[in-house]
Length: 377
Image (cartoon, rainbow, N blue to C red; front, side, top):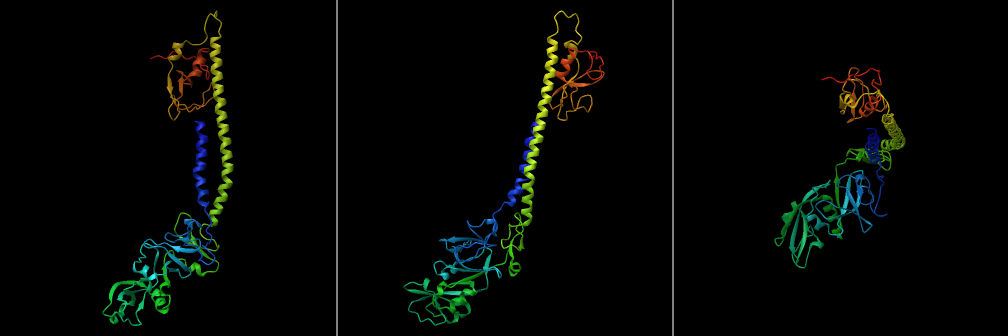
């Protein structure tokens, strides 16, 4: 029984203390960027391979492309270049790596991501022949055209001036910011940017404070909190204190457990050795009796075997109702599955091997010195 106690105590230490150490053993959430010119990534964003995923919110994963450009991958689109992140207003400015944002917008669907249009309007994409006489209010999208036809985009309410040679290709809700930039900058309009916003997690109040950053409240919750540290989130003072406490307790507890286990194992060994020595001494005394002895002092084998013998259960309770836990002969604790023999009349119990060896030499109980008689049916 005692030999199983040491592994049990060690397992308790590993089960309860080391998960606490691992919970606080997280990589710091420092700000990071792909290059000096690229945007700075911090909560709720996390930069893949440079920051742990636990430093960012789900859906805010950024990736460095060609070790210089920061990109954002949305569930239903190819990656966009990230040109700017406004943490205070929770907006992000995106661009197409192929310099044809209009083509991307034809099939753009932000659903399934934490982002949405800042403001949107319905716009109409037109296809017109190259030779069609198009008014100045219709802006051509060069990256969508070919040798025979051109693409144009107009606001939905301006369709009344559409030439008869043109036909509608698609009507889409698109970000208003993109269309304003598109109409304001007629040269190079294909590379204009698109602004998106996010509403959750809401860190705007925290970002407006000086030297404050937003981050997870703890490692097991998605609740956010404002931190005064420039490296928020997992730099939680409570976790650091917990880590120090655990480290200061694990060493002494391990040493104490080892010492207790060693003492208990040694005690068990000593008791076992005493029991074996007593049994061996008693057995040796029996066999060393001179052959010319006229009469034996002890009891015969049949009388000893007539006394009740019981195997102890899990409770190790003696059959006589006694609360004794130690054999009076070998001074060793009773254990489960051990066999004990109880004497009639006085009802004192002992290890079977101990009392059998004793009764072969003595006819009296080793505790009360009463002379037991053979058990009668």
